[in-house]
Image 1 (cartoon, rainbow, N blue to C red):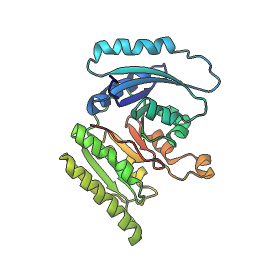
Image 2: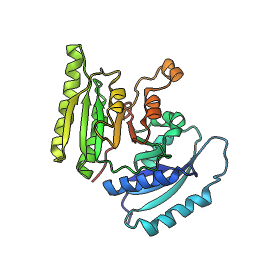
Image 3: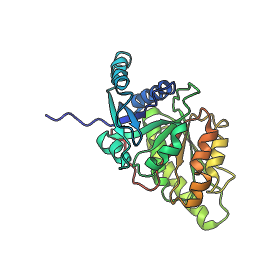
Image 4: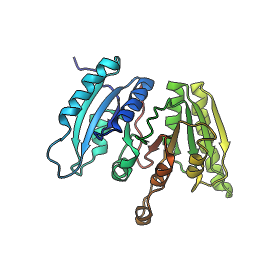
Length: 269
């Protein structure tokens, strides 16, 4: 008889002091969503052996003694230039990938192919989020329907309070798109029974994510959910993606980035 497939929270290990906080946040999320935890060593091109292989095997053994009830597995994956994102999502059944903020530049290319979001955490602060106050900026893009799923998942599974910050637009047509997105999110959140707030910011769709970051302390947020960049130009690559700039300023605030170019996988009950 086949074993049931277990969806997982995947943690990308660094084999340094940041791993502890990444794993602790992974445990928290695995508990919230009743999923497994998978510790992954993703190593770069040209590296033929896994230098942390033995250590990777020891992690699950130690954690099973302290976190009973959460299925824990480990996996070593080499970056061969193929679609790593689908390996994480399909082979490992990931619903979310956790990584340290400092690896964004490298992981951004993988994220652009990923049907599951990446949670970036500053591993130096030692903060384990409770994911109770979720802040999500809403702009005029139709792809917001993908990023909206995640505040709803947190509201349903964690009773989280969601604060949606809508973009302020001058154009009636664009303003209407924002209103439709906010109405869709409101309908999703009402079904969860969890508390939520719908407010309008002072910035338009191009800057609402930056305003959301600046409002994190005001709303006492412990998670910022962003819809990532869609069409990426050479100029974006030259000056840096908006997500990278936001992550640099996020500090201890975890940032979940949802890929707008792929249909996102759902969290199964």
